[in-house]
Length: 626
Image (cartoon, rainbow, N blue to C red):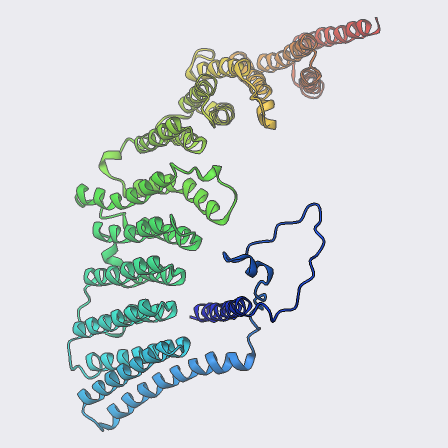
């Protein structure tokens, strides 16, 4: 309420200065002889063009109006006199009316009807006088009086419907709502936001001040929807940010505190979704971050406790309640199609949109999982697949990296929820190849990052998680885990060879092929170690330990040889590192646990590999000296 009057005062000062400039121009035109001759300044070679401040003639440019002085700092005395005392006076007036009603009620001075009518008439008179003060330029003072008058009317109506019981409590609530409409109309007429917030506070407090004898939660939700959503729409049309926040957050808070049971119905779920849908539409045009992020998150939390209806209830009602969650997620999906929040410059509103983009599908999946509809029982991956297809298709057609990545993530999540860990690793490997193909042959943005990420996750799942689920009696080299391992090794090797570096690559894109080769090599080393140890370990433990040591030595020699062939020092260093680990195992573990014949075999293998590697390095040194 304080910003608008200050802006109007500044505009009035500027208009006065413009009027003074126009009067001086008229004087210059009517009395040209009275002016002394002006010396002509020397004309430079390049004279800067004067800035046009107003669209008038050259005389105005020669004699521009004086610069508008900055608004003076608000004096403490003036501030206290205009605002502080106004607040004190309004509160004192309301307190005096409340004390008078109570005192008159205790002493039985006046009839209850007269007491209530006095408060209502007095409040109406004060509000009318405040309305006239605003018409005479006293906006702040007049708004305060209108608020005080509305408070007196609220007290009178409350007394009539509450302690005095002159009218039914429901009628009292309607009268309070009607008073709120009048105050809101005045706020819109005078464009005073604080007055609208005062009216909204009165409307929200009306049901609490006059609760009915038998609570009706559905009627309470309907009342809140009319007041909250209606005021929210008005606040949007006027650009009143604080009023919009107050309307929507109050709408949800009062519903959660006063109609919790009614919210656990399909209609209650849609009541929650209405607030989120309105906020998403409004904040699409207004950058109100706190409303866009806060209202939607609160709506998700309220739906989490509301959408889990009675499990034995009808499935149609359950899906109707879930439809509210789908409405919020669907609207967010549609808004994120264009523009892509991850392609916009950094800002607060963009950060909020990115967070909503990441949370929305998973919030919907959690709500559907909590509701447990019969259609999804035994099919936990069905809904993630559907959502992933929607995101992936939109990302493919619109070439949006964020949508395409989210589509792959949701499909990968569906695989986890539906299949075993070994099948998950194999499916993730296939998705990684599909993403790489989308990058190579369709040039879809975001696909290469999906390919690399899924390949890493598939390797971790295969070597660290799925390996523990192998059946003890299954064939070592031909069970499902072994087949998934072979597929992963072939897939990562093929991806490394097919990887292409873009024209302007990021650091990870430049080294993407190397990352796939590393995954292939690690899977070969660890997978081969697991396979050989399992196969020979079924015969004797000593044979398993010997096979492991020999495999490490052979692998190290092959890595060194490959490093010389490719002239890659990092490959040779990796081979030497494996060889060192094998040597440490041989000396510290095999020497103390293996029998004599096994010791001979493992040390013979160590000698052969060590001599072969040393020969390769010495041969390379001779070639370099030549």
